[in-house]
Image (cartoon, rainbow, N blue to C red; front, side):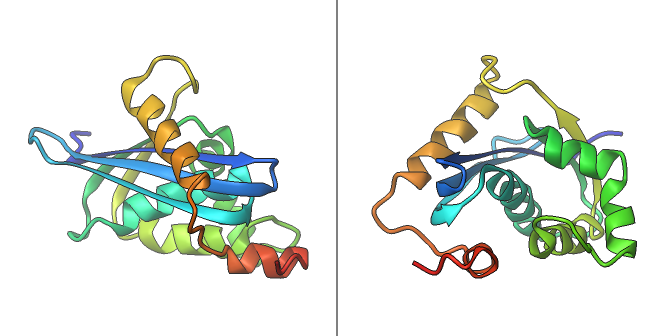
Amino acid sequence: MAYDVHIYTDGAAKGNPGKGGYGVILEMVGTPYKKEFYEGFRYTTNNRMELLAVIVGLEKLRKPNTNVLVVSDSKYVVDSVEKKWVLGWEKKGFVGRKNPDLWKRLLVSYRKHKVDFKWIKGHNSHPQNERCDELAVMASQGSSLSIDEFYEKEEGKIL
């Protein structure tokens, strides 16, 4: 498949759970268009940030049915979608699954486009992955961190 957009993502959490952030690079294939997105949270997990990065990237796409390649170093995210585990979880109402709020949100955006995933090894000199990692870490260290309300409520850790 020829891709219209490449989305590179990474998430980070110091302490896991702890302060976290995500980084996203969105590139329009065949054009110079490239955007970066990031956000930090005061209390979250690495897996939530990996998942949120993909969600944010997909939600930035305005045109439906876009051919998208998501490149991530998260086996958690890539395998869950590519091996269709998330569809089984959805059928069972996400009972007993972590991060149901984010999986539901991911499926909404995922179904609007034609999305493939590619897993890459993290911290392996892949330029966009390294940059996403920098963005995620920088965001997690920011002075004005967002609240991951679902996670804090579920964990009973309203700070």
